[in-house]
Length: 347
Image (cartoon, rainbow, N blue to C red; front, side, top):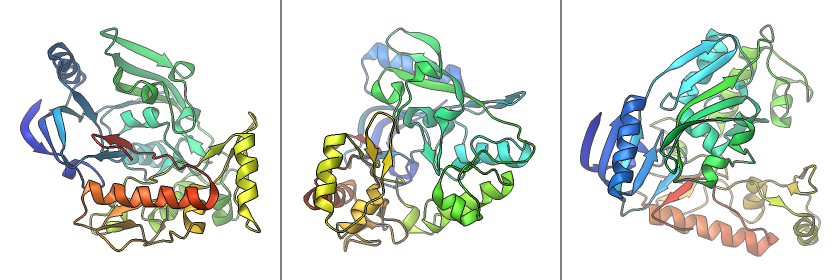
């Protein structure tokens, strides 16, 4: 366990933004994680759990409490079941699962930054896959009960970019995550995302070579500035800043009435709701790639990513986010919702 007082947090986030923590504890074992959480709770100390810092926006004033950085390691197999310690780097774990073990189920989640323990919290997803499809169990510390718990898939209450852990952010600290993957003889999971299918020259539902699917997704993400690169400020982001709006039937009717001759992407759900594209809305509202003249701008590669061009503050980033949110609402009547977790600030 390593403890630092008045510790800079910006270098621990992919946005490179945010003020210092009053106290930063880096935990390398589950026991160190538990000791830190229990000590903070006993003292009534504010606690922020930090993994890879890829889905986090920290205010310029920092965090007046203890920040627990989970740096645990552990990569284990039981047949096709993969168990990851919360601190494992997610992109590295996906690469090992695909390239070393030849197992499908998370290959379309290649290149996503952050830690394994964060994936069930956000129900991380991309290119037609989300971890809810493969997570079997999450081992966590329940701060309310003061005990370790193991939640099965149903107990995680997964939704679109949502889970029980996100719904109760101050209750659970994820320690380990188990995934049930598939040995498909070197083939990928069925393709569900049109862009992937087009790129591979395949049809929806097809399986392709597993390694090819993995490499294709990495290339697509890289082309959008979604694979971390210290030298590329387009990757100084929190990934997609806004979630794709999910509209009720009435909201969708009003939305259609605002479109005029435009045709927006639409993905109907069984419950009658319709998901549309936040990136499409942002672009059509006039916020194109690279939009912004200050130190925080939209990515030059992807309209969903708000980026730090090197000297931005969190206030700069949020000002841009508010401008975009207001512009989309004015144009289409749709309220965009931030995907990253906001610490000490509001949008």
